[in-house]
Length: 582
Image (cartoon, rainbow, N blue to C red):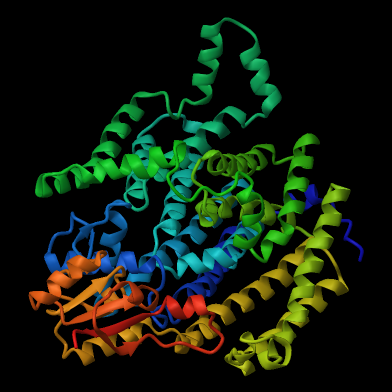
């Protein structure tokens, strides 16, 4: 495989005044294709895992008409600020009510917004081609698509951070100004969705870049000489965006925007639970974690799964960009911006005591920018090592794409029991068509191997794979998930009224039961016996694993669906509806 020999710097200069209309057209196409990935069949899947929190909290806010007190089955749940729940409620006007689509719609919109903002930011740093490619990479990275279709607050945080960085980049040369107030307001609004990350990440990134925009050597030269006052003056001058009177106004207004919902909540409910949880979930979790204590090297390998398939090219992109910095090649400040964005985010989450795989999701735009910067032109990479890494990375993606045909082989032919009972691959015709196009993309790249052909090939493969997974496969897999159907079956069995229904050590399909008031929950069998004796409990939802602990006469009336390929652990974790008493 031979690389084209066009110098990368000369390709960088091939910009013209006519690029803007072409950029808008191509960016629009990227956003349309991304919208298909993010919005198609958005409500086809039942809620799963943590999505339940956003749906149930929004449902109980609507039922109680209290939009400043987040609860799950009547119990306060203030782990996140109120903003993301309000967005779910607002979405109900566009989805016909509170349902799966409404719960996920804010994240789908935030995902699309993040792709647009990244292209605008990259356009300002580099050029139109790199910008378009950065948008494609972000929009087709596995976990970004996943969280853009998942009820959470992670993609909303990414979109808010990108908005803050774009505003800073647009006004970097101005230093201070009214835009600084807007920066703090954006950070405040972002922090109302997931937490103080909305402040921390942009401030960290902008502050680090402002110090390093001319390189480490220049920074050290400035702060190594002169009096302490001179050194501090130079650091302040580099961070003029922060050290000005507009920051005082911005902090005051941004702090007010962030604080008001918590103050309203405190006055209505008579407790500062909200701000206490802000401190616990942000400050305490960072310095003294109480859960999610992943190893310190967690993100070194996790990022390869989050950014798949583009992560196969990330090592090459990092090596190439760093080698360009050592060679003092242009555009120097743009490269430093992208590198500081990437490494500041990586170090921040690594230093946090609480680590979980998806916490580092905000690094994806920076990684997309670096990979796009490496692939954007047909020219040869400067670093020999980067060229080798690029070849290896692409070979892994190409092999996986071609080898994907084995997924058509029936499970019974290749897997041991009980997995041999797994159903056949869904939408097989669609899969075959997408596989053929993916193989054609591999052939296209191999016939004239270059970084830009690699970008086109992986972009095609990534888009088709994501489309198949999220538009065809995952909705088809709903036939084998039973929580939603179980919830509706429970309502039908108990006559539609939840007055005598209780829960034991599980909240079960609470959202789908849609109770008008909280259901009694029990963790101790003595409390359950007392409720039965009073006639308050006639039906109960409980996991199979907890039934032997009851010491109470029960009759199983309904069970969440089970399948032959599930393990004993999965079976025992299923919920059942039992009739209490003889």
